[in-house]
Length: 76
Image (tube, rainbow, N blue to C red):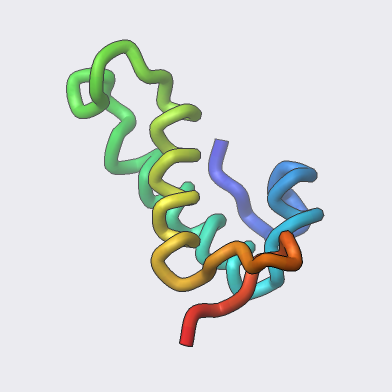
């Protein structure tokens, strides 16, 4: 299910990521849902949701990192 707005994101994403990272997560998740819709494009027995979540978190981690304060910060 694609996310139309940041407010539609899962609670853990909304509770822990800053707004910019939430936007990255949303866009990456939605793109991954389109790209990996066919099971043959996914690894192993991974579900579409599992694959889209992995892609989205990977995209977030390219631009944000979790600090020693346990909060996510934009990389410099």
